[in-house]
Image 1 (spheres, rainbow, N blue to C red):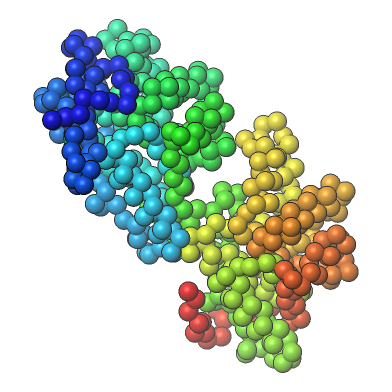
Image 2: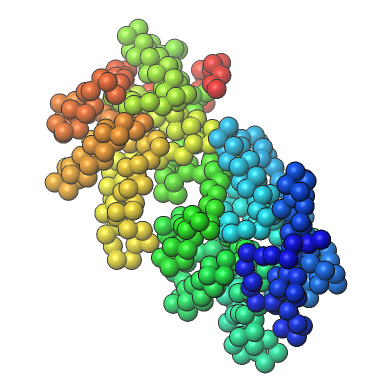
Length: 453
């Protein structure tokens, strides 16, 4: 017999019918089974939903629900491997996300928030949850936030679909899946409607799934506060590249310039054996290359590449970043002058991010790569920002890669003192002259690079 107890009693969607004494209008119940039964705790449709099996619910307006567009999205066809193979951390991220999604679809308790970049699988998992629930006969509504807002606007002038009843239906649907949540540049009306929706479902603890491409910190504060309640919301961050464009590596900070250097790898780094260089010059290139490879495998402490312009410092730093990104690890790559310009821009009232939040993200990056230290303008503000950044990462011993064409004597003393600490910092000097291409096509044979990982 079904268990007649429920955790909450949301208002029924079908107003014309009396409230069901079994499910209290929710539409589904949990079976009263022994704890060792494989179906223990799983949801089943209430007897009142007999006429609404297999997702053919009349309680959710068909002209609003987008679920039919995603009917082919299931857990069985969700790929955790990607189209071209993924790094260990990326695959692990997708496995964790799918596991949480499957568990949520069985329990329908609380909220589930999927965060990640475009095409990482958020919508597929959200739709898979919705399809599973609809297949059980549970009234389910799947829609994007832009569609939600457009629908509410249109209902203001509709006599057949009045706003009040439409909004009430959305607020109280037993399972709501909101895809593509955003609040940047939203009107005050849109923010108010979204807050009312989130607040209503938050108070009633109605099962809700949300996906967003934005950082949680960038969402409207009132909505963010509800999404960050650990007692109700499970936040799943998916760290995987766009399935539609798998060549784009991982979930990198959206202002990092590493993607511009995607062609800098260990495989195409030239050791310049065919050039007529001094043996000592070649040795420094080889040593730097080997050190970069080792560091890319297990980043620990700081690694500083010093040498003249064009000697290969940036290529090695980017190769480290690209290798870590290919394994699914976030990498924050900055050219130092660009970083400082970006931090200045956050003081602009029109900036979408605050200075404090942006600087905190950079300071605490799991791997930070700072290219071209020393080319920045040396104002008092610049010196102070760089010192704060260096000092924080030095104290926390966070993996950091630095390239510079300056000599140690030319670097600010406060930064130099931290770079000279051999306990956490390795300085790799390249004394070779700049690499000069003699033609559009290089005559150097490709090298066989020792496999990594």
